[in-house]
Image (cartoon, rainbow, N blue to C red; front, side, top):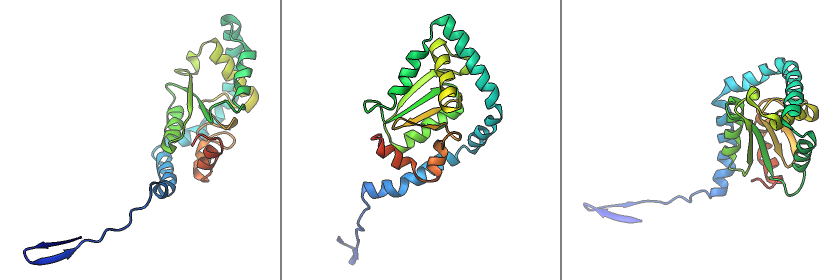
Length: 189
């Protein structure tokens, strides 16, 4: 482009702009790292919560048994829901959360930062405010996956754990750069 201002001729060069796909490939991992880096306290607290895992596990079994019996929480219905996560008709990514949990909020933010499609299933505000069915579901998480803590994230029907704990956990997938691949394989991205 040329212009003539007060007798001077200038030239403006237009550099080729990177494509949206290229920007995504470059920026997405950086954005995900930044997302987790914003809240290192939550990540560290998640590891600290592991010390309470046996207590929470026993509490979840008791809560599930008592509230399930009183309120009619059906363990078979809960098992069927978890089995359904592995079916092809299931959403590619599902996250079970508590409404007041900072770990759940952070995990949802990580998933949102990827731009993936996911289904959020809130069990209640917090573990001590769960109803019968949610209590039975939480106890089943402990039986199947070894943890009653939320969030619980499933990608392509595979239980990957919570934010910073699990097998391997959402934070670990971000750190090793495999989250995006898992989400694509599950058709969630």
